[in-house]
Amino acid sequence: MQKSTAVLIGLLALAIGGALGYQLPQILNKTAADKPAASQGAAAASPQKIAVEVSSARAILFERGINAVGSLNSNESVRLRPEVAGRVHQIHFQEGQRIQKGQVLISLDDSIPRAEFEQARANFSLAESNYKRSLELQEKGFISKQAKDEVDNALKVQRANMQLAQVKLEKSVIRAPFTGVIGLRDVSVGDYISVGQDLVSLEAVNPLKVDFRIPETYSSAVKAGQPLELTLDALPNQRFQGRITAISPVVDAGGRSLVLRAEVTNDEYRLRPGMFARVRLLTGNKEEAVLVPETAVMPVGEEFFVYVVEDGRARRVRIELGLRQANQVEVIAGIREGDQVVVAGLQKVRDGAEVRIVSANQSES
Image 1 (spheres, one colour):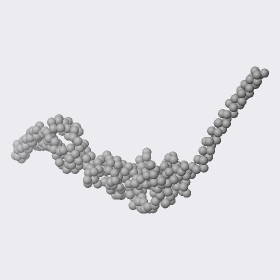
Image 2: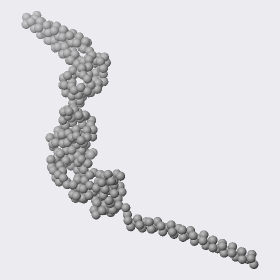
Image 3: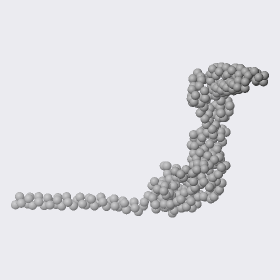
Image 4: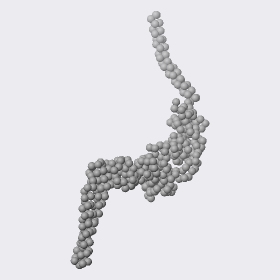
C-alpha cells in the first residue's frame, strides 16, 4: 500500500514538472515581449526632435557676372639660347633680378670672333683700296671693264665677310629682349656652350595674362575691354582687377566653350605665372536675388534641394540655382526671402521630420 502511494506521488510530481517546463518559457517570453512593445509605444508617443542649424534666405542686389577658372601666364616669356658657340666669360645678373630691355646678361669669350672681325676688316680695307685704284685705271684706259668688275665684286665679298664677322662678335654678348624678371640660370662662368643650349629664362610679369573659358551661350555678353575680378587661392581675401584683351574667334567644338584672354596689372609683383585663378567676369547689371549658404544645398543627381523649416518640421524643397558669390548661392526658384533653410545637421534630417533649431555652439556640444 505504501509502495503504491509513493509511486502515485512520483507520477504526479513528474506531470506537474512537465507542465511547468512547457508553460514557464511561454510566460517569460510574453513578459519580455510586452516590455519592448511598451517602451516602443512610449518612444513613439514622444519622438526626439533633430537638432539643426538654420539660416534665413536673404534678398540683395546681386551683380550679374560669369564665373570661370584659369591660370596666370607671363605677358612675355622666353628661354634665352646662344646663336654662337663659346665659353661663358661673365654673368651680369642675379637670379630673380628685374631686368631692363637691352641689358647685358651673359658675355662669351670674344677673343676669337674679335680677331676674325679685325682680319675681315683689314681684307675689306684692302679690297676698297683696290677698287678705288681700278676706277682710276679704267678712266685712263689701262684696264678693261671686266677687270674693274672683278675688283668691284671682290670688294662686295670682303664687305660681306666683315659684316658676318661683326655679327658673330655682337652675338657673343647676350642681351635681354624685353623688360622682365630673370629666372634660374643653367650655366656657370667657364662653361662651354653650344648653339641653341638653354641658358636662362626671362619672364615679363607686369602685366600678366589670364586665359579662361566660358560657355558659348555667354558669347554675346562679352567683349574686349570688359572688366573682370580675380581671386586666387594662394592669396586669400585679396581681389585683383583686370580686363579682357582678346576673344578667340573659334568656339571649342569639344566643350562648346569660348577662350578669353585678360590682362591684370601686377605692380607689386605679388602674382606669379602659373597661379590658379578664379575669374568673375562682370556684366554691369545688378538685380535682386535670393541667396542662401552653399552648405544648405544638397545635390541629388542633376537636381538640387534644401530643407525649409516650417512649424517645427523640415520640408524638402527642390530649387533652381543661379550664380555663386562668396560662399553664397543664388536660388532662382523654390524658396523666397526669409525662408529658414537647414545649413547644419542635414545628414540626420528627413522630409517631414520634427526639428529643433539650435545655434552653432549648441550643435557642437
